[in-house]
Figure (tube, helix red, strand yellow):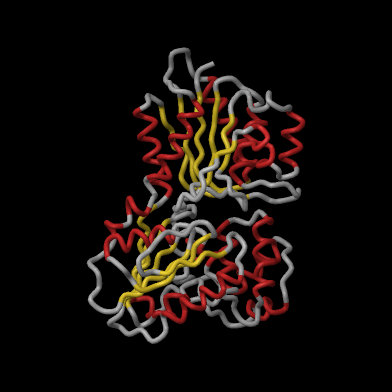
Length: 417
């Protein structure tokens, strides 16, 4: 078998490759509409998606918002870069311009929406009298709270003028096709980018309860929105009948591609699941114990085993270090394995960004703790400083912008002892 570190990195790269919009989006485009076509979108993959659209249609009218550094050259579609995971003024101004593009459309017009992970932050237009600064504070608190992506997006929808189906209603009565790359466990279209083109039956009270559950300060402006009538569009709203939502790329496809590559390398593959959720360090301990159990059952000469999983883990921040769910998972996994021979692992976010750091994730092996010591690793985990720890070891995975986003990728490679 090839070097374990090299093999694990190749598996991750394969998972990213199959989710590249230039490889997969064209097959989901209908013939170019004869009337006016407006292309809009948001997300870390949206600029690449726009590039793929124009590779088929030629120059198009429109605007998409992507993360800083994720722009792509387009012929007609304007690309605006903004902040992620906390929104900024660029995102606010660009979102208002998108709403302007949707004004006055008729039933003879078509809107193509390109939505991927990251749209929740990039597509920003606060509801009521909520200021951008207040929205940023709530977003920061949610990211540090340990709330699941579903809980965070429920709050985001009810504090927004564009999420929870409201972007689709802004385009009514035009026809809308929304093409999505899923980055959420379970591939629920209402949760991808907080569902700007998808109806939602949650209530403002649901959002209020989530904020209270995680003890997040609620500004007066936000409380006024959450105690009033909702603008989020219900799933049964007849105006959504002209909207088609299509998930064309998902974590399951990337895991399947990585599994196929691993099988061709002679590995025995088990897919734990593509929608694993939970606290990163808790899931890491569970996976470490599972890996140890698998290894204990192996005999000399058995084919190496590979445990694959996807989904989205969370981190409850109590420290002030530099970390993210994948790095924290890796550090907790290394601590639980404690230098056990024959087990290597990788965990990366397929968008190339783990938490707020421009680092995809990290790789560990039996020598990870030997390069430092157990106490230093435990201290880094306690301080939510996993990225700094792996940076010192030189075992970070840095990809730069991958131009896609199908959530986390985790692989544990197990050889007989």
